[in-house]
Length: 135
Image 1 (cartoon, helix red, strand yellow):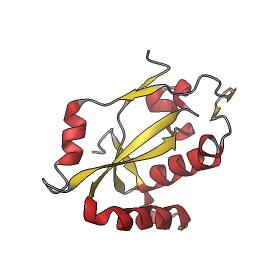
Image 2 (cartoon, rainbow, N blue to C red; image 1 turned 135 degrees about the vertical axis):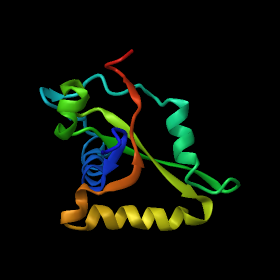
Image 3 (tube, one colour; image 1 turned 90 degrees about the vertical axis):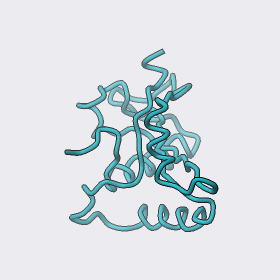
Image 4 (cartoon, one colour; image 1 turned 90 degrees about the horizontal axis):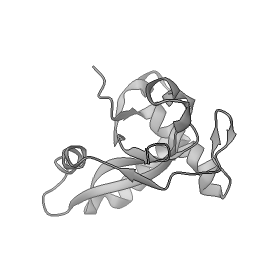
């Protein structure tokens, strides 16, 4: 069973690309009904999820690398239309020594064509509660 907070490789590529092309370029996010004029102000993550990500790293040099993303239409059914076009954070476990490697991996992920294993889960976790819509 798929972990509800895990992003597939396909989702990770889609949300980081959507962010890069819209909000990350100074443009408004695009939701189901058009431009998002009241963008995400904060994102809350429960301790259990943060600790789950940290457990995948070294106890001394480990941490979390946060990637900005933007929800796309693939999240409409599970989260609701009000999430589409809003900013999100994907948490990726990362040791300090791997910071450059992880950055290279993301560039590679964004550049590759979709393949049959794109539904495979990425290391990225997403399960934050956004404001708006939940303020």
